[in-house]
Image 1: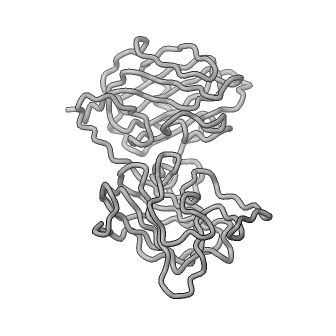
Image 2: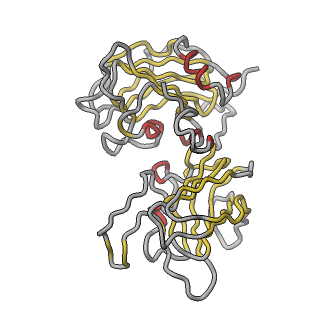
Length: 340
């Protein structure tokens, strides 16, 4: 019964529970850079783990999986500007130099801005002071800023390479309840996976990502169940809301899609972000929103009339029977705001 808080205990909690707002898969994009002679900034935003291919070269030299600038000879330092996937408050960073050994950036600094468009007049605030970096390692730094940001400017001193930049945080969502239907579980709206029965294959974090799955590895897939029971995943919604519909996408899952699924939910404002293990135990007894329904291969399944109205909820438990893979899950509804 793995929970996000218990997985990878050597990694800071903000990196296990926060949403990577610098993720290209969620929509983060490079805006500009001082230099990207050896490797472009966009590689630094990839969701995949960095790799090293010993005999791979391109027209500029050794191919590296990340952002790498040329050797500076005239002073100064390099920087890159990134537009975050969504405005949000940042909890911390992972500045990853894996596979950069004699060409890593020795130090970094991060600034942030909140703006629709970057111009010469954009105001930047330092949210991470100068920090030393080492070769081929992940470097985790906590962010002390409590403001909401749209862009980051990563400075490296004086030059070199960074394999990945991850900016973990909480997306900003207007949950005032204007009646507009949104995906309450979307990562870009603040939806977070808290625990699951199993996640042997694929990338379970992509279950709440935008778009449809690119392939069978772009979603949540469990191992083949050889004992009684079923698989499940628990999600904290981005906002307390009223559920109007459920969309289950089994894109690319053809011989391994779940036979059936169901949805449970609860209004658990008092749980907050902690007590995950207690919350998982409690989830077995949550009320049913969607009773067991059939699923098919490689298709989008929309459910509305089958849903039970439970009023506002904060968490859902998505069950699949008995096992299998789901590419994307959408919990469609309207933010309801806090309880009176």
